[in-house]
Amino acid sequence: MMKNIVVLANSIRDDNRCVAGKELILNGNQYDIGPWIRLSEAATKGGAVNPNTTKIAGRGYIRPLDIIRVSVESNCNNPDHPEDWWLQAGKPWEYAGSYQHHTLQKFVDPITSLWNDNSRNNRVGAGYVGKMGKKASSLALIKAPPGWKFEFWKEIKPDYLTGNPKEKFHRDLKFRFNNTYHEFSVTDPDFMTRHDVWKKMVMDYPQPLAFVKPEEVYFCLSLTPDLNGYHYKIGACIFES
Image (cartoon, rainbow, N blue to C red; front, side, top):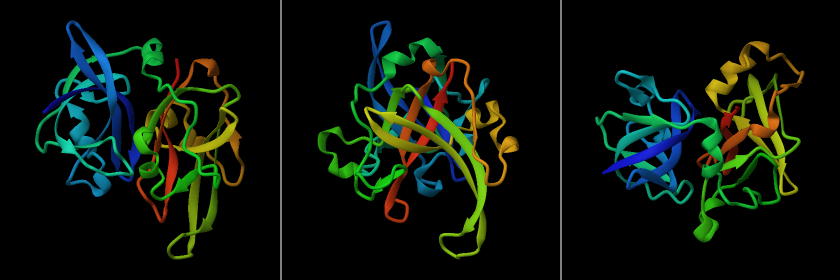
């Protein structure tokens, strides 16, 4: 079946891409906004999408706020990621238009809280989403709350599996959402390039970024699949005006 999707995330996941957005349901000459969809490719590790799959003939790689048409087979039936759909292998994606920044408000989720189990600010325990009931979701689009900030740095820490020293990169989005503090690791490649984060990152020295219009920013947020017993909080896309 074909799905029209507005791209709200095209983030890094291992060496692949995590592509997600909201379904657009054609109603006459306009679209109604449908549910979240995260695209998964069976041949790719962890159900992510190969970057080459996201390349559209005559246009190039997809971009946030693009409208794309893709062929899907079925929902993945993953309680941790209920939005995931299997792509139909070998079917090229089509470009159907783009939205502008000022239209983001209509895609914002009408939520009053984000994922929190009163443990760590940057993660929740495995199985959290499946216990959310009818409101189960591992994706959210919000307008940036007042006082949000982004910090980045690197450090040497023991590897989780081997214990050997390993370079760890921090790119942390931090804010309070309805009085609850959250931290999200940013995996938005366009944001990182736009602000030259990788080149500016230094050892053991958190650096903040300054933004011209912080009140006009939107965040696409996500939870990872189960990773060593936790779902980690991800800043999948940061939209700046």
